[in-house]
Figure (cartoon, rainbow, N blue to C red):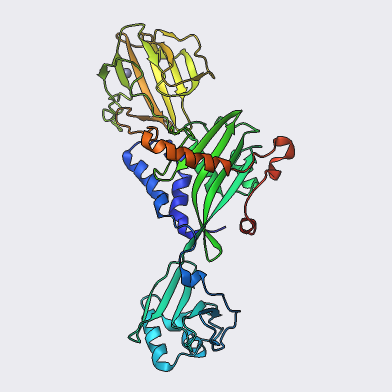
Length: 449
Ligand SMILES: [Zn+2]
């Protein structure tokens, strides 16, 4: 399925399972991401143009002068070895009128070079007219030029954007193998699954935590132009069942962000610091590194001075990837937060009792205690943040807002959420039915794609 107009969102969507999570190494990336999606306020709902939607369409009857039924639309094509001028002549236009029309077309195309098959839609506006006073020339899939006869008798031409019709499609499925393959098996556009992983990127590590038998269900907007799908809109509501934990997201249309049905943000911000009372004794400095001489050593983390035994908190929820003595780093804890971020805590005097590789930790949970194990001149915590395997300056990073919805919006959002959730399709049956049979609920037009 091709959606040429959504090239930019496609690109944005695909680099994001990374990028959004990414929370983003810079504010600019966040902005870019949101720019990549149409703000909900701009979405057009339903058909709005009475001229396009109102009059009944006459049968295709190319190259024959229009009979004059009132308010009619007829469709024509430029025939092989014909021209726009001849097509217009067949529609009843006389030479002087044809000349002004051809001239008005020139900013878009050379009138003599229109290819055979170019579509033309002609509108008889009044019962007493004997030839169209308006017509649309479909130059290509994305360009429609609308010609209108002015009261002065002149013809003007302008780009015409047909009104978009909003429909809601719904999908559900079960993971059997990879999420991506299962989604494709359920007939989902890869963009939709990409958006789903963005929405739940802080709840589920889609690179590591997807389980066979995980399920999803969602509703998504699709926009149609003259009956043809042109682009995806937003996911309206979605649920992802990760190994029995059901994560729910509903779009708050005014915010353009997703929240739980209770109005909490789905983004999880990291704590500012792994220590409750932090005193930075050595900051992040990547510029000390000399790429050729390799003599200076950059400081790729932050040192917090604190007394031995000071509790260290996980800056975000995650899974323990390492909790062991590790050479010069001494006792080290590594937490993996999602597919993008990990944090590293070094020189610990000891680990918290329940911190073992594979165990889950919550944001703020105590994972160990400050010490001076490994190569350390005194008790301190060396803390690192990695994004996509690279060192990041934790103090320089701006993470997306995790604020809940403002209280005054909560009541109306809860109503929106309750309706959106009631419109979700049923969950797919379990794996026994096979992912290929993952049900796909949609309207008839969706099935024809
Ligand atoms: Zn350090």
